[in-house]
Image (cartoon, rainbow, N blue to C red):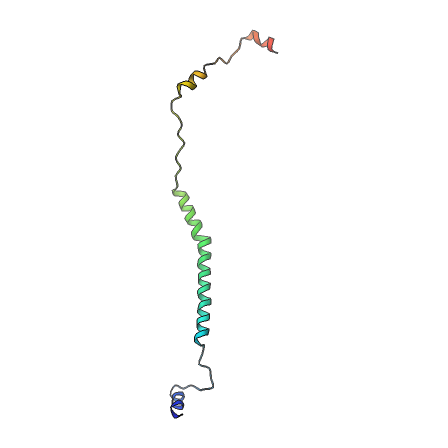
Length: 95
């Protein structure tokens, strides 16, 4: 009994007062803060990181230009040889 009284006397504490938060309450507070930090990081990722990465990727993506033939092929050149004008005398007959 004297040892217990000496402990309280030397550490200047009273057996009637609380020693502070217990391990469980500290753990619960830490878990809440960790969850809050995780939520903040997810929000930053959604609103800042992913859109920025998408914009940067779109800048670096290159599309191949469509290749147009430089020389007209012979078969198309021959088809377009049709005459596109008429004689003046035929216009009266068609109206």
